Length: 122
Image (tube, rainbow, N blue to C red; front, side, top):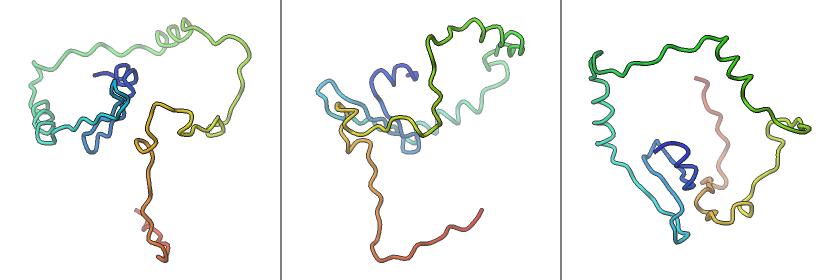
């Protein structure tokens, strides 16, 4: 599955735990779990491919060709408003009525009365 398909179905992926959540036709949240051992087998199998079996990659474009392509792309129309990152409109659960707020919210576990701890520099 590619990104356009995942975006179209409104999927959220957590690669670290091999899980995908998506909205079903009934409006509920569906969950798809991956198999860690199968994923590991696939990954290890790709590491043992000989040079003859590797797909041929195209030559990278030159900077001049890339700049020409960029000039051919459509340009925005009308006046553009300059906005600083993080200063755009805030999204809340009300902005996404089809998605259950429990699906994308995170609750931080805090022990009341505990002292703050500074992490060691790495």
